[in-house]
Image (cartoon, rainbow, N blue to C red; front, side, top):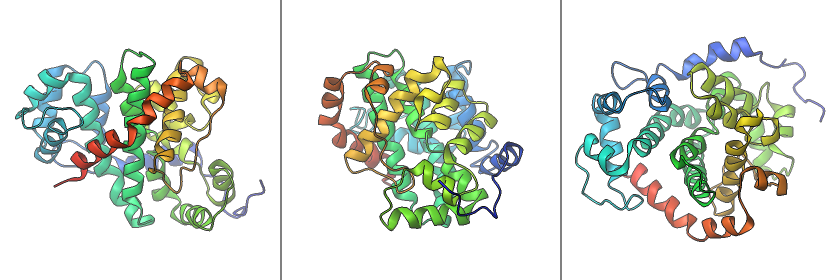
Length: 295
């Protein structure tokens, strides 16, 4: 597709890396939320430190406990402390919940300022995360929570796009709202100086997150472009975005992510798995969303 913004050259990687720091300083205390996400996603971070990190952020601790006590996890009013939450739900689940709460605070205001569409962005991310976790269970993958985290973070690049190319992202949004059926990647090429996948990979790499999560953010529209070792998780999230959109949790700048047999096979899934997950997906999304967004 011919670029309509040829007078605006593509943004290079060094500039995006520098700009990624703009997403980091949002803080609720001594540490930025970006630093917290990095530590929470690092498998070498000990459980005791995770508990301490969350407990030192009152707002974060309250939200983690609210989600931990939600219908989604089936422990209504049983979990009163972060330590208890870890014991009941497991360390990986608490990591995933905390990352979700941090992600919310980092991205929402920036997208609200640029597009006024922060709620649908966050809901799509939550829906993708819930779908990815459910698909991981259907595929009998060992770490369902990693799939959840990958789903939450897959669109983080949109927040960086909003910072570095607000004009382009607004043009892209207008094209989508006008009914364009052109693929999001092609619309980005026409209207924006960068892509949300490139931005996503840069952000998560700058935050020193695991390579698999970086790959999901950088390649979730085209799993086969990811490094071979990361393709199963990337493919799974690709399918999860499709399921999220199919059950009414789409996002204007994400579009519908259709997939073929190769992606399904790469994710170690069968059509029956998708049907099984889809059956109760909207209810599970609503349960998690209610706990995350209620006050």
